[in-house]
Amino acid sequence: MFYYLFAYLEKFDIPGAGMFQYISFRSALTVITSLIISMIFGKGIINYLRKKQIGEEIRDLGLQGQMSKKGTPTMGGVIILGSIIIPTLLFADILNIYVILMIITTVWLGLIGFLDDYIKTFKKNKGGLAGKFKIVGQIGLGLIVGLTLFISDDVVVREKIDDNQNVNTEQTIGIGEDVEQITHDIKATKTTIPFFKNNEFDYEYLVSFFGQHSQKAAWILFVIVVILIVTAVSNGANLTDGLDGLATGTSAIIGATLGILAYVGGNIIYSDYLNIMYIPHTGELVVFMSAFIGATIGFLWYNSYPAQVFMGDTGSLAIGGIIAVFAIIIRKELLIPILCGIFLMENISVVLQVGYFKYTKRRFGEGRRIFKMSPLHHHYQMKGYPEPKIVMRFMIVGIILAVVTIVTLKIR
Image (cartoon, rainbow, N blue to C red; front, side, top):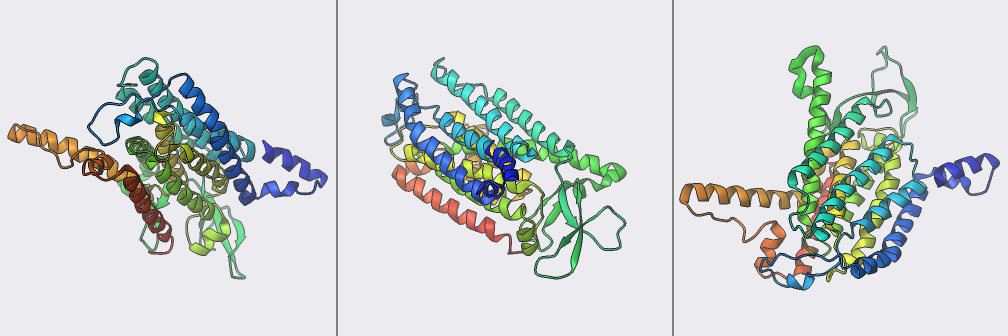
């Protein structure tokens, strides 16, 4: 809202009004506002949850210090959601198609998670929302995101072309040179593939055998990929939310990395310098991601060991979905296995544990386990590692993965 207000005031030469046109300035204000909301108003929300006795029901798994968490307020994800949505509405261009998609993602998965927490807490049903309904919700969001990216005329990528090609073009000055480069905006299923010199990959290559229908087939494939990524990453974040500060801390690191990627990919100067895909209008997503970073760091103030509040599915599903959709929008979804390596390890540990147990039970009549317990962080708990040490080491690994992700901009 302030974005449009100050854009209007700028017409009257109001001093300082033009500052709101700068993404960096609005991002800074967004981070500050998000931190204020999560840290100051968050305390009041925690007290309210405690007063209403909205506490975590703990299933005894024999883990060290586990039962001491019983009764800790849950559903704290509402703090994260509010700290993201309010600053975004205040400082972002809310008519930007990408910002709209991110707001929808936040609210959509936040509501699914809230319903799950509500059933667990108020209905005293430890199972919460049935898994099939969560999957349906995640698929629904994937369809909305994928089809919007396909249908909307505002969703384009800009590519350089040869001077002699007969297309509608616009002239842009090449960075660090005097000659002009001819570019044009296209609808495409292109994405970024890491570690390759020509690092743009088009999903259309995979369905080229469809001939003249390959472009439509590519978009169908793209929508399927979106659904899979949204489901996998949101569930990965949900599984990671098992220790105090683990999901929050790793998500803040991932968010900061995605913010950097969005800034350089949405800025024609930096994208040209780094020779990476330029996606018009995605720079505005930096404002949204600033709110995300502020919200997760602010929530970590209360969620770090020993946690005063848990985010519940209200927060974890939304966090995972935000990361997934954001990466898809800026065409960096193929970097998710690297950047979200913590989520991936947690997911894989569960799949391997369950799969191996079923296989050995069928073959030997007795189920065997690879890990002492899954997800992976519980394995280390069972080995006797203190909870804060596990969280800190996972976050260090997350930082290393974030650095590797950023380095892919140059290592090809």
